[in-house]
Length: 164
Image: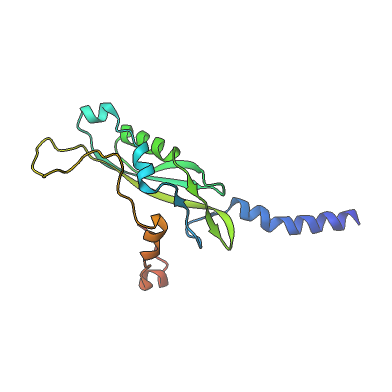
């Protein structure tokens, strides 16, 4: 009888254990950056050494948003400058997300965020263009509103093509 109960417990727990380790690339409700892109922007610290050397660039940070909305396992997908890479990861580690949901349950979701480092131009060619502002623009409705507008090409989906 004990063996039967133990076997039944293992069979019932197996799907739960697999689900806990699953990392989704797409879910019913994608994680949402709390405070929008402005929250991320406020946490980006342009490295002084990179600023002095005139280093600019784009860093693609990949990470997982866990069931509690915290970032885990950050890595650099694209980024040639170590100073900017470190600053991008540090900024992502300071923000929180509304967790993603899959089939009604909080889920672990892989995310990719591009972070662009651009130094302000020294010339005053643009009229009243601010390089730094107190409050950054944000997407109305948040990142989920933006993601709702994305349409996966039918041809790519049929052929199993993925990418960025």
